[in-house]
Length: 260
Ligand code: SF4
Image (cartoon, rainbow, N blue to C red; front, side, top):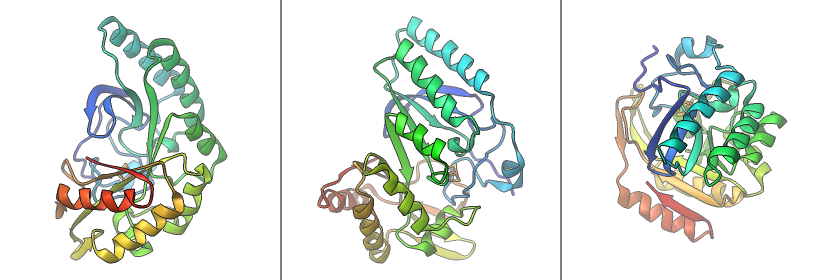
């Protein structure tokens, strides 16, 4: 069932105050009326992926994205509003856009012209890292923020529900392409999903997840929990105290960690 909880209704949205990035101007390369993703995370704020999301091929054209971004950047400059970051996020997985790489190039050029202090960030589920053009484009961004919510294959399949046959090992192997020059973003939650209790805060999962983090060696880990309505309704937000304790364990590995 395609039950959207929250969808961005524009290509360029915001700027909005982001918990993790500061003042963020968003770019949504996905449809404005439905989600398009190759994962179906139980905590997704855009609702379930559903069949509509998978079949849609209504990516915004590169020209449209460039024109709309330029218009907004000109307007923000006139208003003296200076976002800290231009962030690829929105209603699904941005790296699925067939022109993702060229759109990154356009965005960097526009950023250099109108908002040189801003960083270009991409939030991605890491599922497209077998495409060289995606990896190369992500390397051009200032911030690559990649998802890793589980320490075990079982929880990866349960929490992220990848549509293709991606395994957690595959994701971790491909995250190592960046040689540590990446940020890992991890969602912690627990709750009932299809009658099964899902919990990635158990000591077993945390130990396994920390082992993967040590292997990937990101320059930072962003820890967070649920903030808005989620696709699966039975999920609970994890208290900040737990995330703060976990951040201490990450820092003991010599890796920066933030909690939001
Ligand atoms: S990867 Fe992101 S957009 Fe896709 S289902 Fe998960 S949370 Fe939603």
